[in-house]
Image (tube, rainbow, N blue to C red; front, side, top):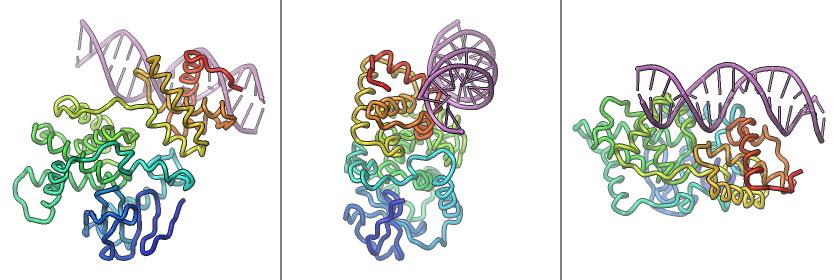
Length: 325
DNA sequence: AAGACGAAAGTGGTTGA
DNA sequence: TCAACAACTTTCGTCTT
């Protein structure tokens, strides 16, 4: 794990810093911005510019959230299928691929949208009475909790909040659990910002816990709240897989090229993007003599070896790829 | 012995009647 | 709501390195 000492903060994982005293922090240790969103009750500060999260070292408040995170983080970093977002990224390549940053996020909130979010967040500080406001505050808390567990940047939470508010206004939340809808809103926000993450990861960490439920709410948001998202792109998954397998940048370029050609041929329609990305990385690896076993790639992409084999066969056949060992 | 391959059966989601 | 369907997973036997 990459640990960089930047007194008085300690960088732990990507986009996260641990500090002794949260009150001493007034600039973001990652980007230097002074636009910090404070959440003292959580012992956490988030940078509204780059999404970096700054936490206090001591664990003494917010029991459910705190008890959950370190354990979960520990578990995920040692055993079981890897969760891309929780793992550290090799320092050699981390500089250029910060998906939490503004470039990878694709787009920023407009000033008007940002004002809206700040206004919503201010409700935390004043006493409120309307059902709508209480609902939104609860949603906000769950969004923050979930986003923290998944390591999602501030911009995604804010976007999700706006999506959620639209859903409430359209009456879509009635009869559904807040946690399912907010999880769906976060997922939609991720998709809009092209952050490659699967619904399963949300299901694992959401209070709702039910993948089906979240998926249903997600479809509802797309259809009835007219949230526009792009189709999941295999290319977005390539980077995640590459990072886990420690492959050379040339391999990534080739994998992306393969995916590009596959898309042009219309091979990707209806297929799991992670499976395609996995096969492309596998093939590109072989072409560069950077062999990784199907098992390794499958693990990194969270698909099975069989799926990789199927995509592999299709790609090699349809794109006439030669030069394989 | 480990990896690759492929067949067969099972699972969960989508679609259309 | 139900059945058909495509994609994916699991499991397992066999071949290859």
